[in-house]
Length: 500
Ligand code: ME8
Picture 1 (tube, rainbow, N blue to C red):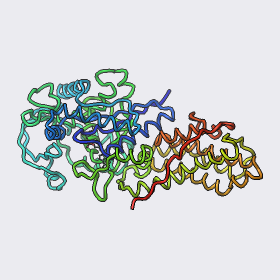
Picture 2: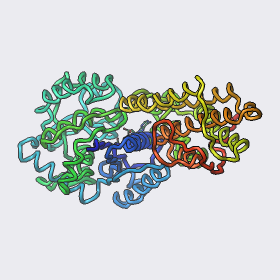
Picture 3: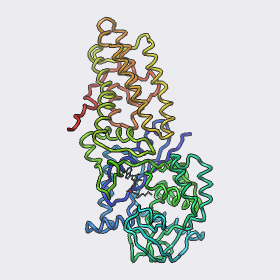
Picture 4: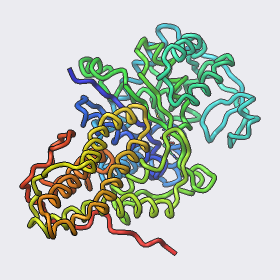
């Protein structure tokens, strides 16, 4: 039986165009999905957009559009970007879809019927930008903008009821919140008594949301609505077989900005619905420009479309995956991008393809030679390449993507060194069998490196595999067939000029 792998990204607000931060999480989910598919897992990858709430309503108002007109214009921009980035999601969810509205209303009704939702008048500090009531401590932290005192009758979800159960779950499942530092952050947060969650907004103040099934004067708070997308998307309430197959998700991927909503709001909602919790919630760090988080409201964003047009999709995917240590923040600079491009992609990976195809062209009429007797050098390359698959698997399951990539690049570098030391262009003049052995070894190592990088750079690696006549997926040594006629190709990654 195949293992299943269900992965989600956050659903992004359609208050503006997607930027590198959104592209990052979505590419990461795509890379993990492709990787799991490559190792034979049955995969489901859900992404989408968050269309309700005040932020989106305000963005629509600014443009003089109705909220839905605005969403209908913005959602395709995300879809188009994902297409350009080679994202192969299984489903794209919009929270204004009927299938989702149905799930939100039935979840609310279920929680209401079991007494987990109650009406209360509440007076407290309200952050307009965050769109929620905040505690006195949060107010004093200085992290919230547009704060005002608000007194309002609202519906509340009994989050506090599930606090102990949640703490127990986190402690019993060490992999549940990752990385470890985030788990500790949430356990720290849960040391204070949990307050109940205000899950409604009165229509006369904010009407862009899903109507509460038990009170027509209110719409649902955007987070209570949005989080449920993870079960709508895999069939909850519409396709029981599908839902039973995929839920619970293996990973909810997200940025550390929305850790609490996922680890506390979502999990207690699932307890109330009597559904199992996701296997793990993984929060990555932020892409920064200088010292600050890249964000729409700060106006310091990098547009992924510009990067794709100028440098190509795979180079962008590679940089984002290689540069960020999962869990930590990383700085996005063009200098770092170009440096990485030139060293890893042009000098190491692209250069190896040029070398082997050039030399096989020159000395073997473009036909992959038969390998002869191996020396220690060939045995070393073969062993390094042979050990890589297991190593990479361990690193990917451990969410150390950058290290998995680096291991593969180290193989590529060691093959380039091997080529320099064994100089097949010299050897070919006197010993064609030996030259053939060297070129076969280098080409086969290149084929394996391309396979191991295929989840990160699907387009460029398929060029390499196609040149080598091998679109198959044999990950053990010897998949490259002698006598294969190499296909002509362009330079994979021509070196970039460093901008002045
Ligand atoms: O929070 N670096 O949507 P959102 C890395 N709708 N990742 C970043 C980033 C950055 N600088 N900026 C954004 C929402 N992201 C809600 C989610 S889910 C049920 C509802 C990524 O449009 C990262 O994944 O503000 C972050 O968590 C997400 O975009 C926030 O997107």
